[in-house]
Image 1 (cartoon, rainbow, N blue to C red):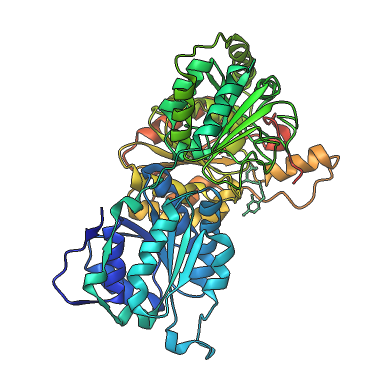
Image 2: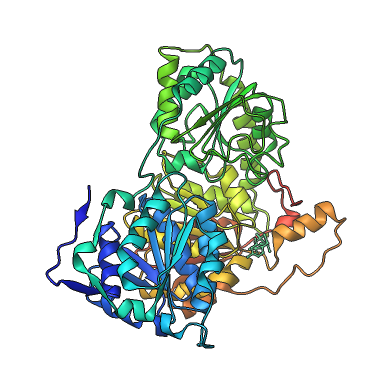
Length: 565
Ligand SMILES: Cc1ncc(C[n+]2csc(CCOP(=O)(O)OP(=O)(O)O)c2C)c(N)n1
């Protein structure tokens, strides 16, 4: 429903109108960092009910908005100033957009009247942000603010969700806006906001194909989690007696303790056992999944032509991009699965999930043998095992690339459906987890949030430890410390005959760094201390960091890995 904003004044300043429009779309928090061009906006924020989280750089403000959006189902909002504020906020928009997460970034800008005059920080924000967002705009006059903000929310939350960017010049923030035009439809502040159903004829074709399937398999991506399709997915998997695999972003589409769950497949979290389940399928139903290089191990599993394909996606451009698709179902995952289930009626296919169970057992037997090892340096498997054991089912875990993502994707069993596991799989940029975990904690403050990172990632996010300490966020950071860009060194080992080059760096005492920020911290080198120390850190009602000196990836046994781009 369109919600008018209550205001007595006939006009608002542009900056006040921005704040009121955000509020009217249901925004409660904004992550960002101040600058000269943002002074009017900050003055308006000061008097508003919006909570402002001051960050230590704009990249992390965008990652925080991303983590917040992932766990709340609402649009995440971040802001920064012109020039460097725009170039620094960009990486967060890239990740959110490619991961179909609605993040709105506002960069304030030099005045319209100063354009083209060698003004400090002048930058073509329209051109800069165009390729990395779903939609972007540069405001030229205050009267356009309401329309532009309404359009941003509509673009971010309808169809395939994505990121939006608005450049907000200094003089536009100061110019008047008609208060009567400051209104919003709050249902556009959550996503997916306008669900669409697939063509019933296509649904009937898919149902026919599924009735004849011998070994159907679901592969669910982030779209299944975004759509909150877990109940419909479970019902259909039950009817078909079909296994359900996920991508990394799809972790949370199904409770991983469920008999149907296969776990994560692909080259960054899959294992030979999960690959075997994919290879055995004769009909594959991709759900909200792009069937990209990581999920399919470079389009080899499933092999082309191995299986008939039903592809559910809200974006018509996705099905058919990588595999010959038998039935594309264009629409929202929840509604498409529900329509398919209805078309199958009371079917209860005879199916045997015992081979899937045997594969899962084999995978976890190998894992637990390594996880219980008392070897030093500590094996990454031990960290995954101990941390998973200690976390409550509703805890949120955010994993950076390097060791954390493949290991936690493979072996951390998500108990319960919905978003509890986050990794930045669109671009896999190092240094995402800490900020995304901050955003996730702000969005879901009553559960424990843990960020797991390598020391390469630590070097790219350490400044935000100050934010964690200042806000006294009772969250935990875990550093898998090995003094190397381990994932890349492992690639040099496997693909380049151990011709190691420029991948090692010196060891840092991350616990000492954290305590410099005022964060309670531990450094662990003894395998028997991993569990007890993590337990203390997780139980603390204050920010904590655990630095664990681990076996580097090139010496460890990684899950299925693919180093070739
Ligand atoms: C911003 C960015 N730069 C470079 C890379 C390429 N890269 C992928 S994994 C990796 C090494 C990660 O090192 P670290 O965080 O120490 O974790 P480890 O692999 O040692 O566990 C690098 C450099 C990246 N993913 N992101």
